[in-house]
Length: 100
Image 1: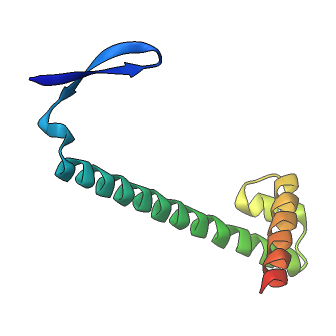
Image 2: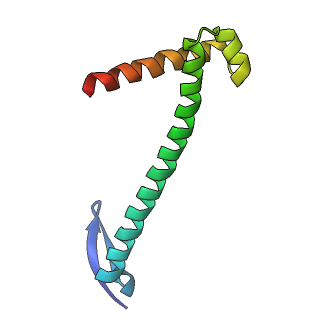
């Protein structure tokens, strides 16, 4: 096996040249990493959309006049958490409208 000496953090180490480091395998690994990043992003978007449906429903109940306590019992969360969701969701909605 061929190798060359390289300096890493002030220390000399052997760097082996293996078929693993060919141009084709490097390109393939880059494509795999890009694919995995896209896959993670899609998972996150799916998770966010599920959460936003729940948050949207909570906001609808709140706007219809239900109390924080009733909504909290319905979704099995505290009334403080319902208040936070309503505040955050309405803040995000206002910001979105501001930029559109």
